[in-house]
Image (cartoon, rainbow, N blue to C red; front, side, top):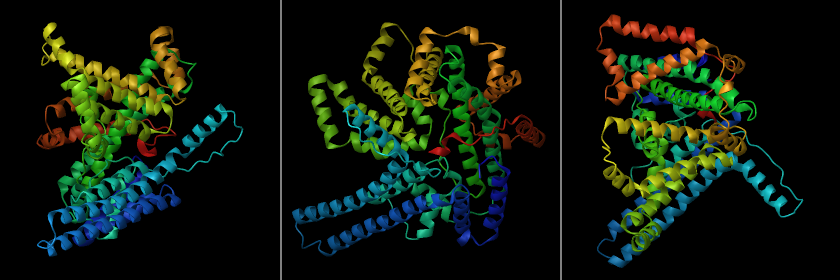
Length: 530
């Protein structure tokens, strides 16, 4: 039940009718039923995995809270009896016990995720090592079909159990409400990765009917469909052709293919998120934004704070801060300050934490070596930027560069866009690392301008009008992005316009979607596989 099909919109309409007809206290049950119908529409057996995560995390969350509540009650009753050392010893014992339950939750769920997504990669690696040492014994390969959105619902559930462990809020006692939090249907396929304390209230409270929510939700969905069907799928035809065979097309076609991939990936992913957030808003459910004009970023670090925001904040809260503030990091910082100077010493733990995060981001994207290289490529650039920041400041003074000037900011945006596109090479090279390296070499030694002609573009499968449509679409998205970058809420601003102006815009987008949509045999969303 893809977001761009008629079936999905009929499903959404029926769900809205039921949601607003029944009493408020029970409206969340409609969302739960819809979520499981939606999930089951893809693959019946896949429900086992989401149920496993839901049940294990729900039970372990309750156990963590019971342990803490019991400990608090015991300390309160024996406040006058226990010495300070006894209290400290007891608290450490409770913390250790809670940590065991947390580790069980993490191992069970991340273990399931790893087994499903990375078992073939691990077995292939083991077989390669066995062949290298001269052993003929080989392990048999097997593949587990990954259920849609397993990374998203696993990360969301793990954020909940970590927060319960840290005592940030009380655990959810109602199993079915917790099941809704894990499986809420719009976000199940590609996020955003929600946090329980922000998402749960708006899921469970039974939202009142609001015409504004319905209107704004439809507008957001329409904007997502515009980006997906008019631009992403059309650009994807060029990308698939340009990178399918590493020997067929050379440097300039690959460069154009990379630019098309930037269009495809952003329009596909952000368009899908628009549909997700718009669908949720129609039910009165508020979800976290996942994009904030990422191609306006002035550095790789800023790009990742604007792109897939909920994944970035997940990594920051649950990996970066714990790692960079750990005892090991403190020791590394002290050693670095002593032997390398204050700046390098201070940056050392941060750099290691960033490299760890982007290694995980690479693994999260896939089990191939090119994804790990892609992650580390971003991590190394960010680490070097942190380490060399004093050098940059000195350079500004020496060359009299105004770091606040528009020209310098424009240069930073262009530089970041180029670096991001170089990183996309590893992401888009479906044939693996060899194909990625071949593409990078082409940029230097074999640009081959001769391939850039009408015959090549015709062979790829796009007509001149398709390139014009993509170009105009990019201009429209750019204009909207500039307006949003200026702090303007586009939907709110449009709602204040005279009625004829509003409906002219609505009809223009509706007509564009009907007339210009580019439907392919494989028009699913790219991040659904995660």
